[in-house]
Image (cartoon, rainbow, N blue to C red; front, side, top):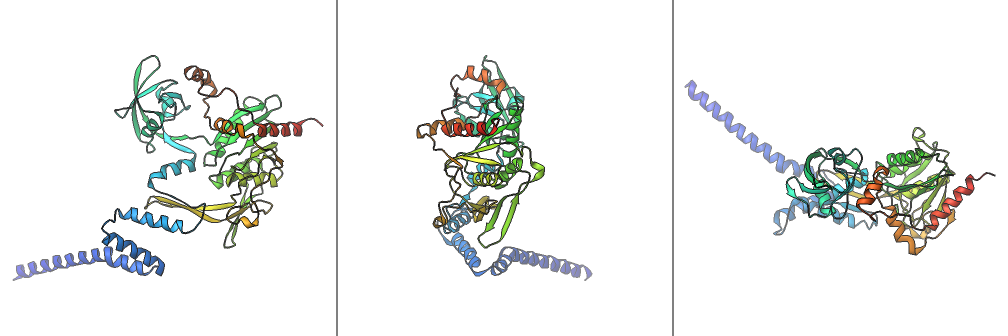
Length: 433
């Protein structure tokens, strides 16, 4: 009798455990989501219900995550916001690289035919012994000798800290192999660093976009000029810079200002938030500046240009800027593998001026009018843009690169009357009275 009672008790326990587990599963997968859904506002309940209905009943319903992302894109399109954008899984890596100013790879600049133009100093390729003119023969055991640079670059990139094995051939025919650990390398948001008038100490650099790395790149560019002579004035070229990270533009403004407002963010609901220069970040608060701008200078470029001019730290030369005077909020949905960006408000210059000229065009053309208007020569615009995008090899490698790849890099900068006008303005400002 006791044994039977024991078996009965054990059976009851197992039976109860079974139905408890079933109850938990039902609660977790059906009741829980249903109760959570009913706690949502009606519009969100309808959206969730529509997603569940299509997923469960449509013959052609595909991946539920893709279905969800399609719904998100539809909502974004309904905003009629020209600045709104959706970044899906396939484009997330590019978005993160643009935001950070780095890419994850081995640090080698490649020729269109796949040969190494030069390794980036201190990067994995440089450490592994790759040199100018080397040809990469295989990547992780797969033949790569016939790949052009874009396909080869894609093979060489990958997750941070991952290892890629390459086989390569030097110019003398000797072959070698190496295991390289991928790491973030600068993509180059600052370029065209050069002297315009070395004797007078007048330099130039072009800020291509604003990313997490841009302020550090600007510091390095100025330090490179200072290593060769006294820097008494600077032309900061913002032409065709369409913006990027607002915080980066504020950080660069901090390099040239001793403090004060850089811009004010005004939400469309009326709330405001001030972004100020950090006094601790100032490096050259008294350096004479001229900024080059044109219709391709937008967003962060206009924030920087407006701040420096309103504080009396710079003069603007060129053409009216684009007039993108709004800021966007960026939302990362890591579970869904997508990013949303949409307009959240407008920014004001330190003097209180709104620069937006597209969402509300009736208020005026928007943008910044230069202090010295100078129109670019249409015949030279293409050459100037190509020159600005050149990723120059280190000075120690330039002779070797020219020998191996003759004509790959232009020898002289193109004629540029906007830059010439800026140089004359700086020279006049620094001339003895």
